[in-house]
Image 1 (cartoon, one colour):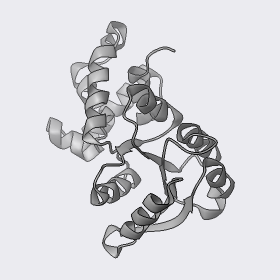
Image 2 (cartoon, rainbow, N blue to C red; image 1 turned 60 degrees about the horizontal axis):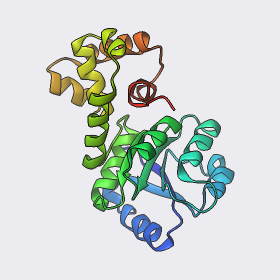
Image 3 (spheres, rainbow, N blue to C red; image 1 turned 90 degrees about the vertical axis):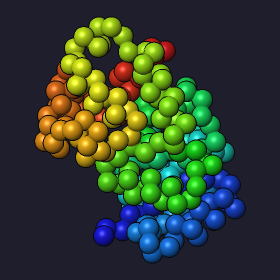
Length: 211
């Protein structure tokens, strides 16, 4: 099993230390390579420490976590950024996704579920706390424009909705009763029709309201 190299960006030292200690267990396959108390510290050191996944708080001293994610993705496009915060307001959620976060967890999430989410994100998923996923789906249902719906088939809309809730490609296939190759084919069609190049862009294209 590949060990996931993790960086924690969190200014609450007791919380960060407790989480790091918990994740240190061999059973999770996670190695915490750095804990940064500020976004600025993370941006300075990220290329040297080379984590696979960054767990990012939203409320940080100085630069906030959302801007931090955007800066980190510019410096290290392959870095997987996962939000871990107390904020569950829709504008914050969608701003984080637009900035490049692949998932969104609440701090009240049990530690073992945080560990599972880190591994899932590294495997290609977009983990979200249930409360966040419900808000994403609700917003998805409310805000899809009619002309946007028209370009997708009903099955493509089902795939996109599951994508928005953080499902892995294999999980989408199981839910819809189709093969992994079929899921990938639907995704290629979705990307082409929406003129996007990634799952995050596809979800954000439909979830983000015009400013």
